[in-house]
Image: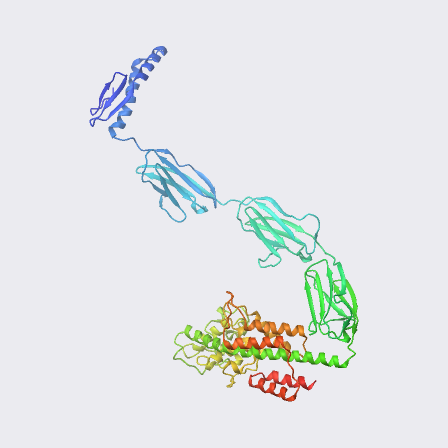
Length: 629
């Protein structure tokens, strides 16, 4: 029988075998099972000696554990081989029969530690290795080691093959006609895959305004809004190397006139009225052609406005004249609609003359409003020009002491190389592309070359007017830089003009173009109001009859006030100067009161004042206008 000198074996009255260690610890084992086993042995004829030996061996196993002072540590849950797909979470787990054991994880015999992509966690006796989003490189043999014990498993991370669960198809039922909204969709087995879409073997661009891409989980859609005839053909969606195709046929939608062309005005149409003709069709977004007495009406007709909104189309005639009578026709593709108007003339010559003079006075009021816009902008422009000059010099190194008088538009080379030209617009106009062989960097520490880069960068259209400026003055004269932002199309500003050194020397159009072209003058502000005002200015100055209607004048004055009352993205008024408030009041007076200019002396006074305000063109137009009355 097994005997351990450090243990004493006894049996108590209850039939329990007791082992007492030297330290006094007591281990008890029920011997009743031995008795029961003995009875069974007799019945089966088993030898009792054999049973005694087995009992003794059981005691030996038990006592060996006690002799060591603790249970033998072993893995009760081993790692298991696993297969994962790329993108899935890998979780490996094993368990010891003892808590708080410090284990070591390794992959292909290299130790693995906690990182952003691998997490190692221990929870009492259980130990985990977690890879939240597996990639194929995570494949290998993983081992968890505790002292001289270890458990291993092979992990394979495979790229999951895309399977088309539902082939690409058209969601719409029935025929597909022009201007419909069409949806193509398919389903795959893997979520969050990004597809590529093709139409007739050409990839569909993401910036196509009529196309919407929609991917949700495993479902992917291509939505075509207002489908056109050229959208017909084969469509294909591609996921990695897996494709699915379908085709669509687009049937031409015929235009139908829902409401025939008619005159919106009620009653007789008389000279100088505003007349509106309109019709409705069944298809949105169609562009009509308008005809008067079989002759197409030109788009640049100043008295005519074309208005198309959804399915409704209008032709508006301002200050209708006797020659505007006759037949009008609108054409959509091959569909037409017609109507006619009769214009009744003013029989009283006094009334006709009065209307003509009123329209002339309206034109003068509009140009006077331009003068007030100019007066209101002079101070804000002056401040903006100086601030911009300071910002450019401050951003460049060693510009305070440097001056240059050697550079011009024919010899200056920009700081950048031609291959790295930063322009996205007007790239061919950059100095790096114009006779670069004969150019050189500014000899004064690249001063003019660096300033040129800043000027181009701050120009909204990357197209500075270099013929307006003198490069040799860039470092010292703010207005030499401001001149680069004055549009040549409406400017009298020329290179070397010594008299134009402030905002007071500029025409209204030149002041407006500064705010349109220089994106640094007004940050976080929509420049569209300045562009609109500049367009109105051109319409006034190029009006051959020097006449505008009351409606047109109201539109001009409102837009001119919007310039002086411009707000930023926080709805804060940008211009708060007294000069601006005075100009706004003057324009409001023009809105509320008609002016009365009858005598030659009044005309001469207006011309004299206009010359003093640098409005030479207005002075010339005014003199010519009153010579016609």
